[in-house]
Image (cartoon, rainbow, N blue to C red; front, top):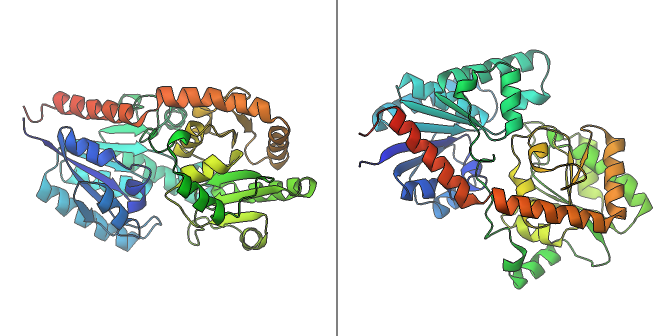
Amino acid sequence: MQKAKLFRITTVPMALAYPLKGQCSYMHENGFYVIMASADGRELATLLKNEICPHVVVPMTRSITPFGDLICLYKLVRLFAREKPEIVHSETPKAGLLGMLAAKIARVPIRIHTVAGMPLMVASGAKLKLLKFIERLTYSCSTNVWPNSESLKSFILQNNFTKSEKLEVIGKGSSNGIDLAKFNKTLLRNNAVEEIKKNIAYDKNCTYLLFVGRIVKDKGITELVNCFNRLLQKNPSLRLVLVGQFEKQLDPLAPATEKEITHNNSIIHIYWSGRVEYYMALADYFVFPSYREGFPNVLLEAGAMKLPIICSNIGGNIDIVTHQDTGLIYDTYNEADMQEKMEWALNHKDEMAKMSEKLYEKVTTEYKRETFWAQMNQQYKKLIKENNILK
């Protein structure tokens, strides 16, 4: 049978290169001709090195740029009209809006949008109204909407963004499963461990708290830094490692918080790393204070590395972590509760280790990457059959 053509589109190449790593190549080798699309960016070289699929540059931006967005929409319509794909599958908000709208205009029969988080969850006023309109427009242009967690699916239904028939969570959730060959303590290279130790000036007498993700306000970084500084006064051997980059345009930190991160000798900022598993192996606790998520891969990664977790009470987090069973959950935005949970964890190391063992069993049983890929591949083929494509 002829291979169906599948476009996998994200706003920036980083999403394809890291959170979705390996997925496009798997589909390319298992029944589909895959073409990737995103804006240009520093991660594009890594993407092209890691994946066997061709890539098309579409100059999308994560921010709202009306004139530029119209140009991108026009380019996508022309691209889809020329290539005639059977499936266009988007992920990330801007790629979802432009990709689904262009695919509908170009009459692509199967139009899938994966919802992996919503900026509107922390918006208000006119911006909230605009983002809700964009969300509804994206879903109306899609034939299928795949939230990457049950919590996100419930949120979509509660807000009447689309009808339930369009919605489906693949497997147990997530956008790409967990790579258990990478996030595995027994497979780490000793020389790389030593290199990471040098990067953070590792001291075995210190206790390391780790965060991995964008260093922005919506990730709860302000509260994390504040709580850490108060705990540091009681325990000078604490260290906070932040792996991720600052963002100056979308949701930047307050200057005072950024200054604290860059000038506090007990806070170690690593701009970015493709080897976060090594930082997880050296850390004692993983703290994830985000305000909004779809289904955070980073919690799966920490779970696979048997790293005890303290996280906020939001959708996505609570799909993975159960309070006082597989980790600790605190009230989102509540610094006092966050600090209390962090302090309890520091004082109950054995109990936290037992929770991390339980989460490890859950993650390695339910979220293996290859299993997730097979489930997604099966869903693609089901949709092709239902739409009588490529008989």
